[in-house]
Length: 155
Image 1 (tube, rainbow, N blue to C red):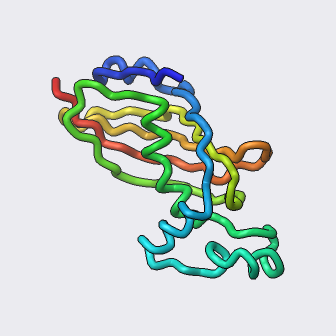
Image 2: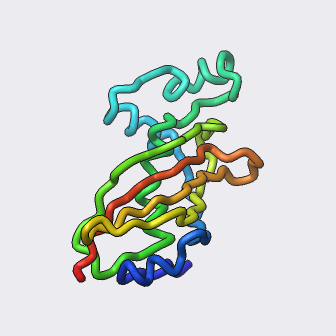
Image 3: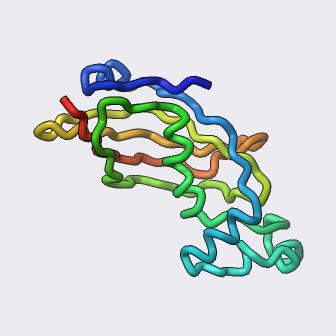
């Protein structure tokens, strides 16, 4: 898959209201979940204890942390759009996010992104994007919400 290349605010503006693309699927492994638990100090059994999850969890296995799935956004986003002529990109906000379906260990996920709006803030581009994390072979998505990035284009 070739990412969409954006080099300026004017090019970005051509995509307002449109879907920008869909990433490749990414496998969410137990190792990934364990590493996230260690990094965030969130060691709840539903994420780490496979035996207990088999018997006590309504999902029948361990599940990824909601914030782990959210943290995959940058990796998956960079598969959709490649920004050139940008000196800096900053996470700015997250709005109206809902975790609708847990990501069970070994599920594959991908993100679908639509450009909602752009604003020029004295030379900084504020982009609001609707992000939907889809789970392979599941009609319900893992999450949906608006993520806002600030792009500092060189010109």
